[in-house]
Length: 162
Image (spheres, helix red, strand yellow):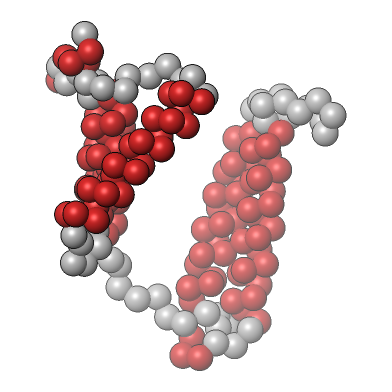
């Protein structure tokens, strides 16, 4: 069998792998039924849907001809590094790291750090645009999670709020 689109083939395999993992993991929870859904209902059906989507994409990659074979290019290491680092820093700043004595810095500081670090993945990023984006994200997150949903987590650094 000849792969006609490398990008679609491997992305389809990735979708199928993640879908199977989600569906399999969801079976450890009570699935329930349509009228009384359990905690495993949504992840199970989401995993099944993702697996079906991956199978369709993989099948299409094997059947439909693309120009040049749609080869997979080189890895974009810089964006990959900054996006992963931004998420790790966000988690550490939001909850703190007691093992090294770093207190929780809160949601606002974590969102600003996340936005600035992730935006460094872009070539030619601008500080002013990033600051505006971070401010909008921080304000929107505060309104959505703290005011509307009433979630209880630190908003500001613990050394400021006490």
